[in-house]
Image (tube, rainbow, N blue to C red):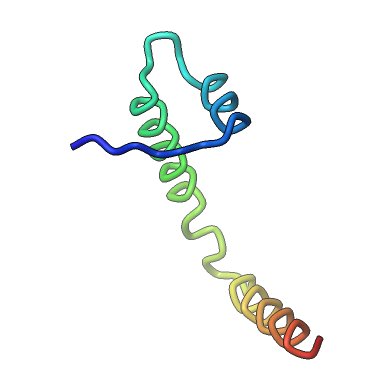
Length: 70
């Protein structure tokens, strides 16, 4: 089933610049999603054995509190 999506001119121009000569927009978007997933997978586990996750949670909690006081 086919779907249509609307994008502004700047987004369309950016997509055109990323699209290969023989690539459809569907091919392009599928490739970009696949590459993004691969990038996320490559980064999975980088914080294992460190306290970075706890520090990130604490920083997020502090930011949320700061926003609440404004």
